[in-house]
Length: 374
Ligand SMILES: [Ca+2]
Ligand SMILES: [Ca+2]
Ligand SMILES: [Zn+2]
Image: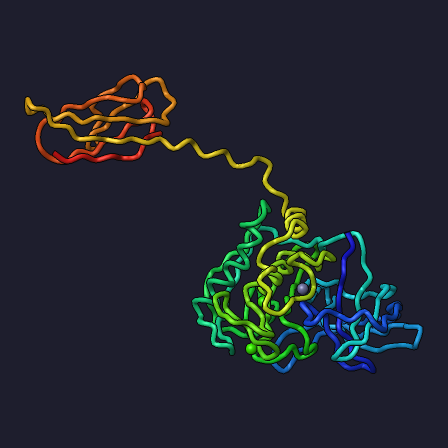
């Protein structure tokens, strides 16, 4: 499978950045191919106090050499990757396209749909619900949980990203706390970005992923908010970003959640495509055995009958138990063991309420409880 990596690069040494979820999609005009000829990473901190590794690049193109900075890289044995895109290394083949905010560089990479880095176990994350578009905190929380849960609920991957609480923290850093937050600015390095996922790892093991929604660049909506025009449904964007968080890169399949462009007002990304499911199950193979089918539901009905003689006799009808014999319980006390033939009668000692249950003999496999009153 072909893998697409998008980056935005401004010329002449200005800042550039890995790009996620461009709106609109990158134009195909004025594409030039070239190779990275220099790549040098360093630590940096931006105006928000965010920890960064920044890589200075030079790219040889047919039209000349382009200098740029890319957010992400490896320094002092630590790697930062933005939106799980690979960091351009010397020799990387890239495509450069003119874009609204300058130049974009797409690394030409083929034959895999993930970066191969995974979490060693289920990953916990916290949420800062503060946003500038008036989405209620409870709604932000609910839709964030749904976005993370999509990767578990819609696949058989043996992995979960679990919400553990809210936070007031608003700085993205390698602090072993995975945070989802809104920032009321555009991305400082790419005005087109809708959201970005910043991940750190050592070896092939992820250690920290932070998701930033660029609240200052777009208007975000809750699912139930309509009408929508030139706006972004936050659950869909977060579902895409949690795909990066899990370890997926962009897909070349346009219908996939991990496609790199969001279409305004679309609610499609919250539903995983087969390609997304294949990707997450590649990273986190399903457990060997499928879960056992649930036992058939056993049911019991009880009917109160009072005969002319004054005898009160409860008619019991049940089904769904597979044992030869069944134990009949009345008000929680076993009163008889009988053949499992599906019907019986119980004469009660007097007026009152009686609750019945049939269980497979000497087990806790039981029908529902059924009550009668005389
Ligand atoms: Ca963090
Ligand atoms: Ca906004
Ligand atoms: Zn992305």
